[in-house]
Amino acid sequence: EAQVTQNPRYLITVTGKKLTVTCSQNMNHEYMSWYRQDPGLGLRQIYYSMNVEVTDKGDVPEGYKVSRKEKRNFPLILESPSPNQTSLYFCASRGLQRDTQYFGPGTRLTVL
Amino acid sequence: GESVGLHLPTLSVQEGDNSIINCAYSNSASDYFIWYKQESGKGPQFIIDIRSNMDKRQGQRVTVLLNKTVKHLSLQIAATQPGDSAVYFCAEIPNSGGYQKVTFGTGTKLQVIP
Image (tube, rainbow over all chains, first blue to last red; front, side, top):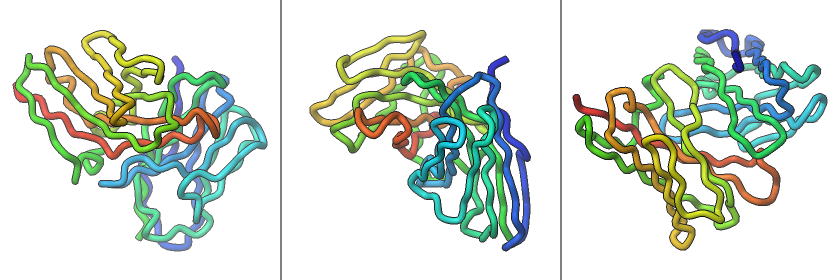
C-alpha cells in the first residue's frame, strides 16, 4: 500500500529538548516536504526536498532542520524546541511530475 | 485533529443537498489548483485538481470550477453525505518556481446534517 508514515504521532516535550520527527514514504518519490498546520493559518511549508541531499527552505523554516540522506526518509529536526512550535505537522511526498501530494497522518507536537 | 476545524468558516448542509465551497486565490501566476479534504485526525487527501487552461472539471460527485478573471475556485459536492463532513481547502501552484511553492487556503469546515 502506497503511504507516507510519520513517527511519533503525538509528542509532548519541554522547551530546549532536541527532538526528531521521522517521515518515510514507500512510493520512490523524489519530492518530500514538511508542513505545519495551525488554527486560522492553514498549512505552511517548513522545508522541502527535491531529491537526495537537495533541501531548501519553505515559508517558515526558522527553528527547524531537515536532512535527506535517503530517498525514502525526510526527518524533521527541532534542535531547541520552543512553545511557538506547538503545532500539527505533516509530511508529504510526490513524484517529479505535477501530480498530487500524498500526506502522512500528522504528528501533534506540544512544547511546554 | 479537531483543532484544525476551529476558527474556520463553517458550511452546514442537509444530507442529500448539494454543497458549494469557495476559495479565493491570490497569485494570478498560479496555473494548477487542487482541492483537498481533511477529516478529523487525518492528513489532507486529494479530491480533484484543475489546470488553468480549463474552467471546469468533474469527478465522481465533485466538480471544480475555476474563474481566473476574479481568481476564484469552487468545489461542488453533489448529494452531500455524512462522510463528506470534513475541512476542505484549496491549494494553488504557480507556473514558475516549481511545484514546491504550494500555497494552501485556510479551509472551510463542511458539516452535513443527517
